[in-house]
Structures are given as structure tokens and as C-alpha cells.
Image (cartoon, rainbow, N blue to C red):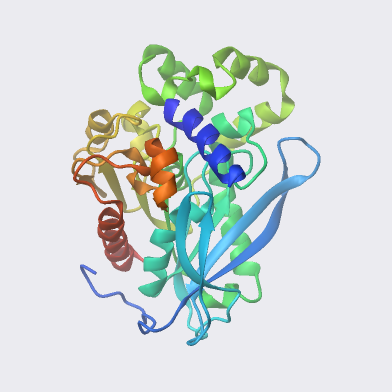
Amino acid sequence: MRLLATTVLTVLTVLTALLACCPAFASPPPEVPVGRMHRAWVDEDRRDWSGAGPRPLAATVWYPAAPGSPVSPWTGGVFEFGSFATDAPFADTTRRPLVLLSHGTGGSAAQLSWLAQELVRAGFVVAAVNHHGNTAAEPRTTLAGFVLPGERVLDLSALIDRLLADPAIGPRIDPERIGAAGFSIGGYSVLAAAGARIDFATRARRCAGQPANPVCVLPPEAGFDAADIARLAESDPAFRASVERELAHPADPRIRAVYAMAPAHVSLMQDAEVARLLVPARVVLAETDDQILFAETAAVLADRPGIAVERIDAAGHYVFLATCTARGREVLAALCVDPQGVERGVVHRRVAEDAVAFFARHL
């Protein structure tokens, strides 16, 4: 959890201060711009962490836009997210496969725009939600949002519901072809949405036996510690309700394939948890990733039917974040500067091509 705490604080500070095979669907022509629209949905079945209202589902949707739609850059703090046609009309009325995206702790939907852009260019519709209480898109994070990823899994299911019901978006989605991709705790979230999950109590118990595992360690910079988590778990009804929901929520059968980049918590999993994953999965790991324990994560996933593992040589955990400005590389080297010999843009292109090929095969 060192990664998760540090990313929350660092990214919030920065943002507030400043085809291996042919797809079985029609790809838009190269000149079609990538559209981007936002939706401010809510989930009436769950409360926000303050208890003041329904849980927010602030979503971004990327899609093939009408030819000639003007594009403009999208940036956030020191991050560059690409150029998109904001609120442009759809290119056509084709029903396309959908890929959901789940960001890392303290991140936002925008951080995976590099992947969304290439998926759209290959003929997909893509959507992501800013996970409430655990996103830089909100003024602050919450302890519960930080340590209860089960709510992220429910966000993905709720997002599918909202997308299919939206009169402008729903008719452009093929509900029989839905996949999900995520990074870090978002990578875990998409695996969990498809069945491979580890509940709060089990995570806590296994972390007690693996005190040096980065996903279990809270640094001083986190602003809270294990004692704070224990107190909240004991005293907060919303926290306890979330733990119960995590235990009760089954895998979402609408999700037919998952693509996980540097997924957190997998190093804590045992055979029973991994065996619950019943859809094709591809997991991409960064060789020098010391935040999720590369070797241990790879070992848990090795020789599993239906799970393929890809390694990015020499890369670290943050290679999956959006590219940074020159200023970002100066002031936020931990998130913006990759190991020597690793070019983030090159890695993004490789991973995006791999993801396109994977989803084209399985959706």
C-alpha cells in the first residue's frame, strides 16, 4: 500500500496546484477524431463517503467522433492526456464493443487516455469513472475510499448500467461485448469485477503475515496508519456496509475479458481467489516494479489457464501513467521519469497495441 498512499498525495498535490489480429467489427477510418464526453452520474443504491448523498459516478467516455470534429489538447497539472473532440457527435450509429477503464489510486480517468485513444481508433467505445474517495478529480480522498477497493468494482457495474441507459451512448454499445482494463489498484479492480478478488478481512490477515509487502505498508506521508483503519472499521457504519457489499457482490457476467496493468493485491492472492476468474485475462507487468512485487505477482499468475502474462523489460510501475510535460519531469520525477532506456511513449504504444489485439480476440 506504499504505492497507493504515495500516489494519492503526490498526484493530488500536482493536479490541484497546477493489431496482432483483425477486429471483428468496423474500425473507424484513420481521419476520424477521437471524441470525449463527460457524464456526472450517481449511484442511488450507495451513499457517498460522507453520507450526504448518493455515490458520484463522474465518467469520461471516448468514442469515434464525426469526421471533421475539431480537437483540442487535454492536460491536467503536469500530465498530457492527448487531443480529443470534446462533446462531438458520434461518427456513426454502429454498435461497438465497450472497454471500461479503472485508474490507479489517487489518479483519474484521464490518466488512461493514452489507452482509450488507441482502443477508439481500433473501433471500441471506452469509458472510465473517477472512483469516489480515491481520485485526484475530487478535492480530497478518504481513508475508506483508499482501503476499500470493493466499491471500485461496484462502480464498474454501475457504469455499465448508466452507459447502456444513456440515450446518446447506449445505442452505440454492443452489450454482449464488454471488457475492462485497469492499472495498479485499477488492475485489481477489473480482475475482481470478473471474479478474482480478495476481501478486506483476508487482505488484512495476509498483510499481517507479509509486513514488508508494498501493498501492505503505509508510509508516514499517507496521513493515516493501520490504527486509523482499525478504528474506522470498528466505528463507521459506512465502512462496515462497504465490507459487507464486497463480500456479497458477485462477478459481473457482462464483463467478458479483462486486461490488467501492474495489478495491486495479486501478490496476496492464493489459488482459490485466482481460480474464480472465469474470463480470459491478460496481465502486463513491469520488470522493475517494486510497488506490487513483480516476481511474486508473476508467480501467482504463472501457468493459469486463461491468464496470459506479459513483461515490460526494465520498466517501473509508473510507466503506465500518462506522459508528463518537461516541467513534470523536473518537479515530479518519481511519477514522470522512467528507468534509463525506457521510453514511456514507446511502452504505451506497445501496450495499447497488445490490448487492442487482446480485446479484438475476446470480445
